[in-house]
Length: 220
Ligand SMILES: C[S@@+](CC[C@H](N)C(=O)[O-])C[C@H]1O[C@@H](n2cnc3c(N)ncnc32)[C@H](O)[C@@H]1O
Image (cartoon, rainbow, N blue to C red; front, side, top):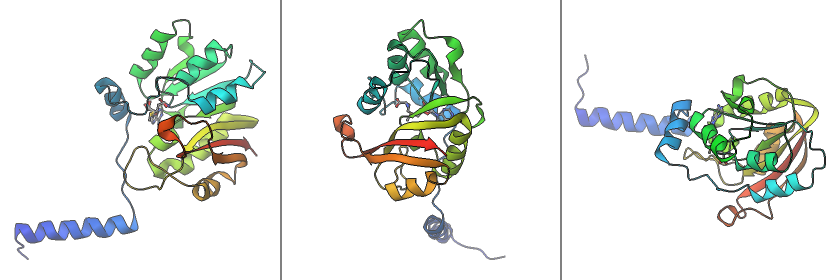
């Protein structure tokens, strides 16, 4: 049997890790426990504490208040609150974290509990006219992106749409949030969606200025 010193074994481990990163990046596992703990610890750097302005502007020009709207990974979901207060009563939030959903319920007591769903997006079923994307895609391990696209497709009614924001900075192992580019997103979505808009958002909050793309993608 070959006996290696501890230092040699550590060096081999390091080289192996480096080499594996080159071929296949490893992303941390982001479970429901991970997200619930982030809320429990108050470690919610993504929380805007207000409806995201580009999404507000989109909602403000919608006339049909009967639209069935889903906000996956909605978190504290100021977007759901805004929808509800503007008269969109068919608005649903799906999130891993019960704590996040409870926060929304406390802020908006008349928001129906049946529309606050503690579940895994990837197993949740329903049919929606519009799905709002707001820092959910970027919170997923990038390996899940193809599954996100196909599940979004399944959750939308014919000609339903994804509307919202995708980050526009390089994708690395560092995250969440995980980034991406127009080229990557076009490659991911264009088979199943007609990409009507994917451009730098002009009305992002200052901290995200020039870092996010406003998207509107219609189910093919
Ligand atoms: C970065 S936070 C963003 C929350 C919210 N969209 C916002 O902008 O404040 C990501 C959210 O996605 C939720 N999440 C992550 N993976 C999920 C999954 N597979 N199913 C449901 N929710 C998930 C987390 O619990 C968390 O609330």
